[in-house]
Structures are given as structure tokens and as C-alpha cells.
Image (cartoon, rainbow, N blue to C red):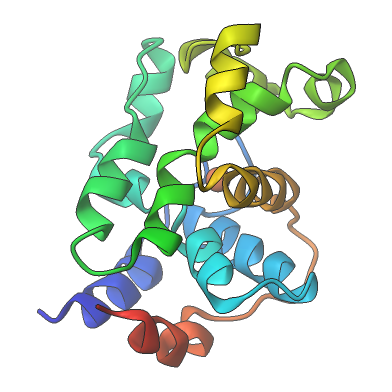
Amino acid sequence: MHILDKIISNFKNNKSLYIGEKLTMSDHMIQSAMLAEKSKCNDDLICSCLLHDYGHFIIENPDTLVKNNEDGEHESIGYEYLKKFFSKEIVEPIKYHVLAKRYLARDNKYLGLLTEASKISLKIQGGVLNDKESEEFKKKKYFNNSVLVRKFDEAAKKTNIKMKSIDNYKSLLKSKLI
Ligand SMILES: [Fe+2]
């Protein structure tokens, strides 16, 4: 199957809920992309948002992992897979969106805003970054975009908004294949 068809079919067929939340993983990712569009982000960032949790489609039992306090490292799994098909501009922020969450959680206000499920996964993912880790992260080329992906990610958990379909993003994804 062509990668584009595979992505579209994964979005359409995966009905599993986003871990601990009330919307599907597919809708969560589409909603992240919608927020990036609304904020007039460029197409690469919109694609990063759309695909940021793609690793969860690849991991077999994400819920079980969380229950067992295990980190499935979905960001790395998604990155390793997607980098074969999309540019660094798109896949690097995917790789670092969890690190961005751990960075942002240094701010107590941000930490307080995380949903319960997100607080639990933060611990499993290694917790809040220390000063040294945070400085290292800030030096990364895709630091800003990684933080943006994470911010849209965090906000994309609404169940009462009009959703786009993955079909609406097909031509954008196609235009970004390498
Ligand atoms: Fe997410």
C-alpha cells in the first residue's frame, strides 16, 4: 500500500481513544493540525501536528503500556517511521514533542493545566526536565517548532467542536512526501 493511503487508512480505521481522554487518537491529531492552521503556522508545522502521535498507531497496546507504567516512546517510533517519507522540518518536532512537554512542565502554571492523563504520562516519560537538560533542548534547531507542536497537542482534546476529516489533509500530505 502506498504510504499516503496507509496514513489515511490508519486515521480512518483507528478508533482507539487518545490515552485517558475522550476523543479518538485520529481526531486528537487532526485537531492539533486544525489549531496550527488557525494560528497561521506553515504547512510543515501543520503536518508535524497532524502526525505527531502517529507512533501510537504503530505501537500495539498504548493503553496497556500506560497501565504498566511503561513508556512506549511513541515519539521516537513515529519519528523513525515517518522520516522515511517526510522532511526533517516535519519529523524532528515530532521526535521532540515529548521533550517539549517535559520542558514546558518546568512552568508550574503549565503543569497545573495538564489533564490527569497527561500528568501521569509525564512521569512515565521521565518527568520535568532539569536545568541542564532544558538548556540542551533549547539549543536544538527544531526547539521552537517542537514546543509549538506540544502546545497545540495539549489544546487538542476537545470533544465539542466541528472536526475536519483526514481527507481534508490528503493533498497537503501528498505535497510533503520526499
Ligand atoms: Fe498528542
